[in-house]
Image 1 (cartoon, rainbow, N blue to C red):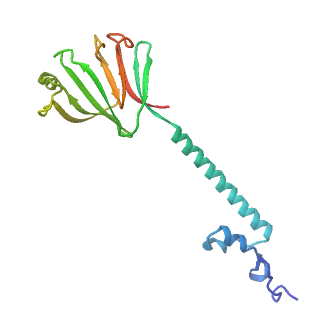
Image 2: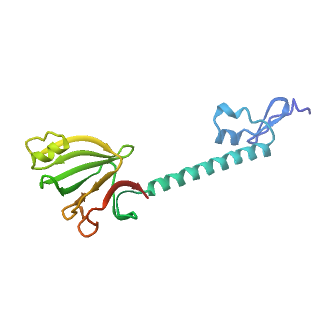
Image 3: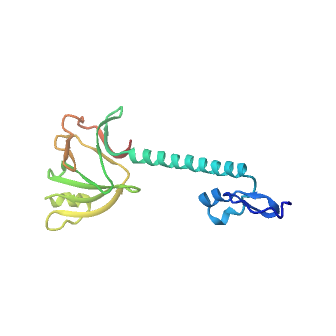
Length: 198
C-alpha cells in the first residue's frame, strides 16, 4: 500500500500532505490554531519544539515573578540627614500620598509655624500647606492665609534643606510618629530631608 493510500491512523497524530506525519494533538493543546499549521514533521521534533517553548515561557514567568517580588519588597522612607561628614539621623516608612509636617518656631517672627508636605511617586516631595497664627510668617512665604491661619500651596521640592541656629523646637510629624530634632541634631548644622528607596 502506498503512502498516498495508507488509511488514517486512529492515534493522536494525523497524516499531512504526501503522507508526512503531522503531530497534531500537542499543537492543539498548547498553541493557537493560527500557528498549528506551521508545525509539520515527526513526533519527536514537534515534542522537542513544544517542550522548548514551554521552558522559555517558564523562565520568563519566573523572571517576572522575581522582579515583582523585589519591587514589592522595596520600601520607601523619609530620611533625615545631617552633619559633616553626613550621617542619617532617622528615617520613617512613607506611603504614596502620605503627608508629613515640619513644626518649628519661626526665628524672625518668633511665631509657631507648620509646613505640611506630601509624597507622590514620580513627583517626590511637595509643599502643600503652611499654618501659623502670625501674619508676618505668611509675608515671609509670600502667601495669603485664610481666616484660620492656613494657606494652601503646591510647590514641588526635590529635597528639604534647612539650617537653624536653634533646633530645640523643630519636629517632624508623620502619621502618629513624632521626631524631635532637639539633642539629636547640632544647632547650626544643615538638615536634609528626602525620599529614599531601600
